[in-house]
Length: 137
Image (cartoon, rainbow, N blue to C red; front, side):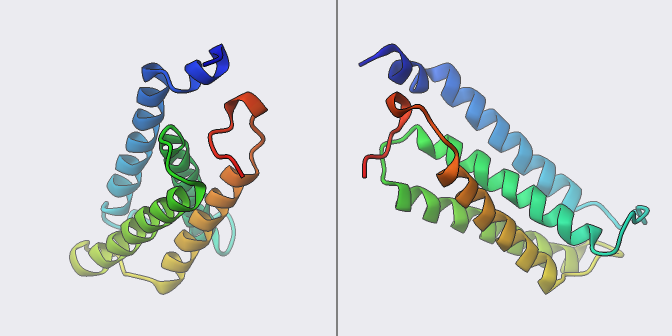
């Protein structure tokens, strides 16, 4: 095992990746379950852009965590998309049912899904040195 390959699989790398993904997930859940705060809008559709970007980063971080494991790329992407889509849909449902002043919006779910798909695509397109590729064609 060469040094680059060993570094990728080190415990420190794994823990940092997991901490980043968990912190981002907890942040999303926390902000999604706050009551309506009447934040100022800078432009029309700002909410959808924030949903898209949040789930893009969530998907990319989740893919980076799953990259450590040896399962195939397709399985990693499917697990990531499932996690992001279920989390986004459940948070929208919870907003509509339990949070005063908040409503569930299908366009938010669509923005979440588009962001998650884009995060997975970004992960697939992200160049890695050949010694660090964990998926073989």
